[in-house]
Image (cartoon, rainbow over all chains, first blue to last red; front, side):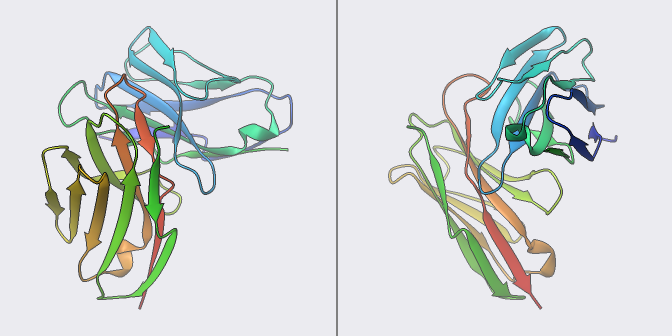
Length: 113
Length: 113
């Protein structure tokens, strides 16, 4: 199993540009999450999904959109990028119930200038 | 306000020495507490998960303790190795929905040979 994969690893955007961060998992997990990690801060939840076709906002959803058309994929869309969106983005997934443990991807480092 | 605070912010120790990292939280009511290890440039990886009824949990050279009365947890690392160099993050889950994970900012641990 590849686990949770994310692409790209790095990206530089200009203010106002858009992009999609890709996330995929091959563990047949129901739950998927998008977090951002800023220097010196704890992870903040952007959006999450409890299954295909179902998404919901986390703590910091403004400026982002998600979709979940399949169990495997959970892309994060940034529209009109702003410098405040400079961060490291992590995708995670977990099974329903069980140990409640989340498995993380390697992250995407995004810089908006 | 639900918060998780970790200390110290950073720590440098010599290889082979022991160390203890601290976590204080104000999340209430409390569901469970996790410790994650995050290597530089990677996503977090779970070390332990403890419910409010568990006082101690070990994972190899890592031992986590929990005092739910004082809302404190610690992570003790025994006989440190160079590969232990990482950030260690305390995460508390409240009773709410899927985004009720409160993440600490982490302790950055450096092991010197």
